[in-house]
Image (tube, rainbow over the protein chains, first blue to last red):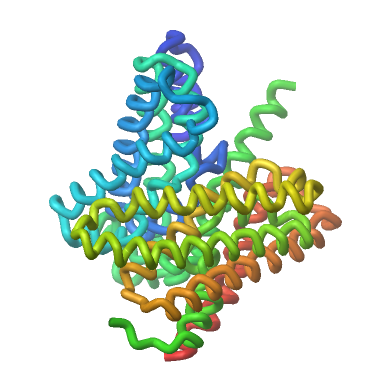
Length: 213
Length: 193
C-alpha cells in the first residue's frame, strides 16, 4: 500500500501536488511529527481512529478556508491568537455535531475532541500555508493534510485493534485461538506501534536512497 | 461534586495517570525538547507555571460561564486565557534568562498548543473539582510532565553515546523508549484506590 502511493504521487499536475503532498511526502504525522497527541491517544480502535481523523480534517478544512479568506485583514501581531479563535470555534461546532450523531462516540473520544484545538497540525497549516496562499490552494492543502492525518490514525488504529483485540471496527478477524496482545490497547502499545511505523518508513527511505546511489 | 482528597488527585495526575505517558497529552514538547536534562527541567517548570495560572483562571471562568449559562464558550475562553498566560511567561523568561529563551526557541510559544495545559483546564471542569482540588491537579499534572521529560532526557543523553543503526535513530527510537517508560508507569495503576 505504501509503495503504491509513492509512485502515484510522482507525476501529478501542479495543483494536485498541493493535495497529494499531505498524503505522503509531507504526511503530518509520519513525516512532520505534528499532532501526535490525538494520534496516540484515541487510536485503540479503528472506529475511534477514523472518527478522530475525520473530525480533525473537518476542523482543518474549515479553519484553513476561513484563515485564507481573512488573511489580509488580520494584523501580523495578533495572527496566532486569531487563528486559534477560528479553530476553537469550529472545534466547538464539531463537538456538538459528534454529540448529536453518536453519544457513544462522544464518550469514547472524550476530552480529545476539545483537544483538537491544540492539535499543532491545524495551527501549523494555518500559519505555514493558509495565511500565505489563496482559498482554493488552502482548501486543497487542508484536505490533503487532513486525509494524510486520517490515514495515519487509521494505520495506527488498525494495528492496535487487530493485535490488541483481534477485531476490525468491532468485527472479529482473527480466530478465537489468538491470544490478544493486551499491551497494544494500553498506552505503551501506542508508542510502540507509532515507533514501528516510523521505523518502517525510515527503512523504506534508506532503501530508496541506497538504490539511487 | 468530586470528593477525592488533594493528595490523591496529585498522585493520580503525577504518577498513576501521568499526563504524558498514560494520557498522551503534551507529546510534542516531550519529543521535541527532551534532548538535554537542564532544558527539560526548565521547560517542565515553565509548563507547570502556565498550568497553574490557567487552572486558576479556568476555575473562575467556569463559574462565570455557568452563571450566565453559556457552556459553548468554555473552549474559546480557556484557549484565550492559556494564550495570554504563555505570553506572560514568554516575556518573563526573555527578560530574566535570555539564554534559556534561545534554548527553548519555538517550543516556548508552542506551549499554547500544548494539549497538556488545555487538558488540565478541561479535565478539572469535567470532573467538577473545587478550587483546591484544581490547584493540586494542576501541580500534579505539571510535576508528572516534568518527571516524564526528565526521565526521557536522561535516557536520551545516554543514547547519544550508544551505537545504533541509522534507520532506528531519531523519532522512532524516542517513541520506542517512551513506550517502555509508559509500561513502567503502568506499575502505578491501582495505587491510591
